[in-house]
Length: 313
Image (cartoon, rainbow, N blue to C red):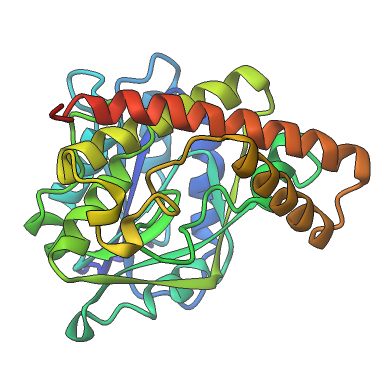
């Protein structure tokens, strides 16, 4: 039977047009072990597929956790969906993951254990591994830890993270003017960081992500991510130059540098080292180096476009 008492944790899942993947995520949540009492808040962002039917069927059955289902009147993007789920969440801790993920059994227990609001740690991120480790783009993204926060831990990634709910509400949640996936998690992290709050990371809190295997999807993902990141950096830092920014928010963590000859050599060397550590075959290593340069050029150009919205020249 579902637990009817007020949960300690609310898992917010925005979803759009991924009914089969959503079902897989929900089934993986049933197998979670050792976690505090939790609920799941599904926010259907006006999916044109059979997501509504899938969720209705799910909520009509008994599960070891309660489920809330929200269905807004219009499609507004994942930031708005997460905010709607956070507003309705009953837990003091809010966890975010996506419908194209599957969680490991110890995921939730490990994810929330490093939260420590008394010492200023209000958010924790976890590891993201590929659902299909043999996929080309899945392996590239895993080698480069694309869906994990940087070592500087200045932001968390909503495929796998948690926050103290009151802190999310205090900063106004995610920026709803970021309509596409990418950048909205960076924006909220910036607002928290500027409050003096900090984040932690737990590599044992694992979700498996179902990466799209196509160059067009890769391009669109990085275009949206780069533009969104540029937009929120421009929004919260304006025209401040790198030299005047907080050191951890400089070009090496957020604002991309131009990929000139010197940077190209550095990128290729770094990519080769990462591929070698991961045991990537040499032919794939060469392809990864080319793809890395392609990704960074996309990031540079669309980041600058997003940032330019707020730049005062």
